[in-house]
Length: 250
Image 1 (tube, rainbow, N blue to C red):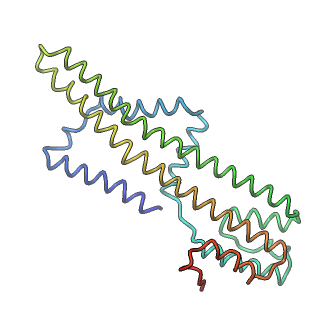
Image 2 (tube, one colour; image 1 turned 90 degrees about the vertical axis):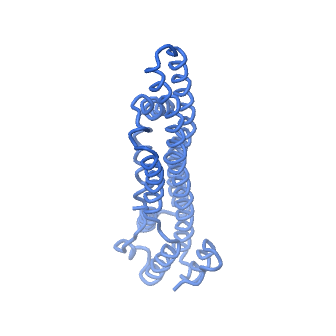
Image 3 (spheres, one colour; image 1 turned 90 degrees about the horizontal axis):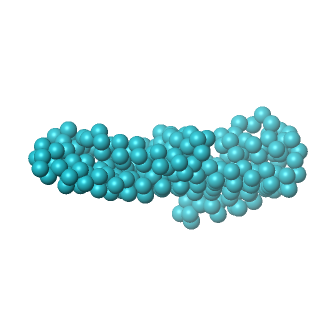
């Protein structure tokens, strides 16, 4: 579980909710019509920009933004060195029973054990990297679009509320509900964009960057293992992925 994402969004909602409560009650800021216009309307519009299969996949990607557990580059490097050492001692076939933590590395190790040459290994794993990047980009585009649509739908709701209010000036009882729609849709649009959609989009972009670096590191490690390089040489190549202050592996 990504506690930063969870605490960040829940914390923002808590602060806003507390402010509403202290200002007269949360019920004042709840309006079904405004919720339908902004939240439901925005999701339907975004859905129209993607296929049903993409939409379902994007929701899984969003869940992964909260469930994802980051893998430290240092841990990947140490694991790669361990595998390289085992390969030097027992050959590539000895890696068949070795435990591997990262699915991308596991796939590469299996290809080494199966005897695929370097060109096939590179082509297959780079294709895998490309598919992973495209999947992340799709999720980022979805939530970026949702964040852009939220305030736009809020403005539409505001205009609807203003029209209803101006058309009922002779009925004081209808002015309040119409004004509530006009103001709350703007609020809901800002909340949808800045507390939900944009933070998730940025989190997915961070995950995509992490995954791309991890996969590139693993690919370099696999190339060295396949070439039979000394584990110390492989380590010297891989630590370049780390900042200078973190290049002293234990």
